Amino acid sequence: FPKFSEIVELTLPDGTKRAGQVLEVQGKRAVVQVFEGTSGIDAKQTHVEFSGDVLKMPVSEDMLGRVYNGSGKSIDKGPKVFAEDYLDIQGSPINPYSRIYPEEMIQTGISAIDTMNSIARGQKIPIFSAAGLPHNEIAAQICRQAGLVKKTKGVFDDHEDNFAIVFAAMGVNMETARFFKQDFEEDGSIERVTLFLNLANDPTIERIITPRLALTTAEYYAYQLEKHVLVILTDMSSYADALREVSAAREEVPGRRGYPGYMYTDLSTIYERAGRVEGRNGSITQIPILTMPNDDITHPIPDLTGFITEGQIFVDRQMHNRQIYPPINVLPSLSRLMKSAIGEKLTRKDHGDVSNQLYAKYAIGRDAAAMKAVVGEEALNQEDKLSLEFLEKFEKTYIAQGNYESRTVFESLDQAWSLLRIFPKEMLNRIPHGLLAEFYQRDRKGRGRHSGREEGEDVEAQDDDQADDDN
Image: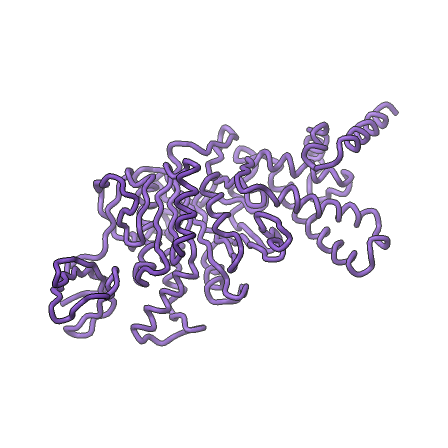
């Protein structure tokens, strides 16, 4: 008898072969989903053979730099890759006791993420976006710029041999697929990327196996080749819609908004494959990207994703409308494992306190902007005006950066200090006095360069400091 998830090979009358998977078994009958679609299949003349095995992925280190479709077949006209192993795409369950707590940092080159929502190796943190926002550009930029911050040396290395990226795009149109492929090839980052592209016109069932193929490849890189792997999955909303479509075809009882009741469990089988395992030097870090329908964060897809993952990075439409790129709103964003990725010997000892102070001053600046809209700037006190100055420069010079502008975490921290120097030292109440004494005066001459003040204004400030010292 056929069994659930068994792979089926169909031979059409003209000799062409297609693959499928058993979705449901009822007695001697099996419901088979054909990966390549059912167009042209004659039910009476098509030969069906059950393989007796589940879907396995041929994996090899030579897959780096290659492009595959959603079924795992090469589409870049490159040489054939000979498999070093065959792995079940569902993965093997990881003993919770053998998991290692994620630590050390993966750097994205984006200040809003690296400084205020740092990502630990082995973490799973989604990007919450919406239709019309530049999440694809952010994903491509992370791929170009991502690298490791070494624990002992305190330096950043984006071309280390043991760092790799697995990128899976699900339900994307031809233009988006071409954008990702062309962007990686032109930049040269394709050499450390394995790219899976499932197009919007590909079969639905293929969209369900695409992230599992990507994660199986990542597990091979991480646990057998001991690489640190960053997995980017976009768009998980397309995946969830495919899950709903298959569930409806199987006539299952629908849950919230028509999605199957087991969607939480299904999503967890993807997200929980991130992490670090005892006895292996590699790690799998996941950044799934999802578009919230109607910008609704209470929609089942972001809602369930938030339960499983360890934080979120929020892409904001209002910031995008103000021409800020990347439009990352740091206030609703959160990285729950940030504390284990930063600090002395990991990034820099002032990292955590600087992040807290930036959050506090940005929130106060937003409140001051709301107050200004009601009472006008004349009614604001000096502290509110400083907060408004910080707000403007923080968004325009710190959060905003170019598509191809990569900042190390150390450059981002230095730039953060130059912004915080807008305030007198006594107003920086989230930073201990010891760190203020060490970092507030340091790089004073670079204040104008980082904070965007006019050169003459900076010289005047330095002259005032010198006069104070003379007194």
